[in-house]
Each structure stands twice: as C-alpha cells, then as structure tokens.
Image (cartoon, rainbow, N blue to C red):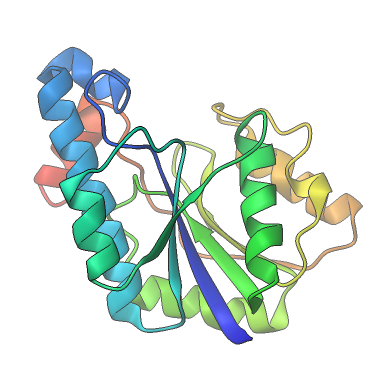
Length: 202
C-alpha cells in the first residue's frame, strides 16, 4: 500500500461541456483548449511532485482523446470513472476507493494553475498529522482535499458550486470532531476575469 495517493478530478474534454462560463467570452472551442491545458498542467505537476501514484478520474469516457492518452503514457493511472449523484458523492466514492490503495489520499481539481510541487508537498505533510487538509479557493470553495479516513459528512449537504463550500466543509469537520489544516488560498479558472488574471501572471 502506498503512503500517499494523488487523485485528479477532471471533465472529459469536449467543447460545449467544459468551461462554459469562459466559453461566453472565448468561444466553446477555445474554452475547451484552456480546459485541456489546465488538465495537462495539473497532471504533470502531480506526476513531477513524485509524492505517490497519480490517478486521473473523469466524469465520463465517451471515447479516446489524445491528451488523456498522453497523460496515461506519462505515468498517470486510469482513467477511473467518477460515480455518484452529485459532486460530493463522486468525490467521496473516489476517496474511499483510493483509500484501499494508500494510507492517505489527496484529491485535486483541474482548474487551479496555482497548485505546484511545494503546495502538494505541504498537503502531504499536513495529512500526516491532521484528519483533513484543505486548499481553500478564493471563491469560497476548495481546490484540494486530503484525508486519511474519508468521512461522508464532509460531502453531504454541502452547497456545491457556491461560495459557502469551504465554510460548510469546515463546519462539518468540526461537528465530526476532525482536525483540519488549511493551506494558503488559490484561485480557480472559472470565468474570463480568472483567465485574464492567470495569463497576466496573477
């Protein structure tokens, strides 16, 4: 069993289904290209950090895709299929599944270019001494969650897609008696302003 497993959540790259808020400014094809760039950057960062096996978890698998083939060839395992009704259920299922293969699991999204090796190393250190490690997002969500023991309360009744996600998760952790370590906040790429900030090096 590995000491640490890294899981990456991503949507299958398909124009019109990904980065829909960004597509309003850039167009569906360009927004999909941005999505692919972020997925690739995240996966390569996870692999280069060399903290443990890296798994790629997709929301669906309608067919082959060159990007995904390249990432698997580079060392990412999978793709695994997300399962469950809603984001919370899908994340919980992946974490429980991953916990069978590692003593701790860190799950990250594919929208945060600010996740780097140092950030992942900080998460890996924190999860050794805390029940939960969170990478807060500036919009009120989180870009990373790490656990040694997946707890369903952290994923049930959370208002996903709102600015209350982090606060609700922290409340759930407190009510469950879990210790939490929060890393430094990072920003996601959701809309045109986020995209321009990223390209400007913000």
